[in-house]
Length: 154
Image (tube, rainbow, N blue to C red):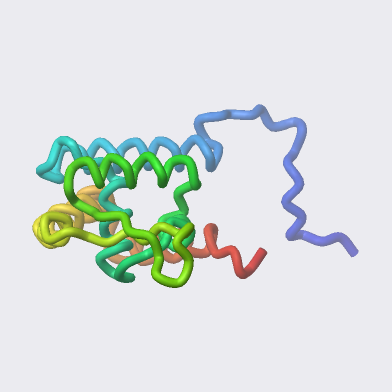
């Protein structure tokens, strides 16, 4: 009895890169980033800087390793982001009380205000990104994306 759920690629079908999941995800991501830059209201703020600020806003003062986990940004990149945000006066860095080698990132009042002021625009970015989808499709794509990135099922 053969398994009808076998999903082995058929070698007789031509490979079309433009229909591959990675390519389509990259194009969707690029579209989302363009919408972000057009609508966020702060030309110096990148999407990854914003999610870093949001992570500290939501979780409170955080170590770099906690930010890496919360944002899914690698260590080298998070360090650069933190340096730029500190340079703009949006965050402060202090050694942890229990381990002076560990750096704790906190929002300044300016950082807190930027997050509060930017969140409505960020919600609009999501709305514009999903704009062509009906309500059921929106629920489905968010569910499927969460399922794709859920590491607990690996």
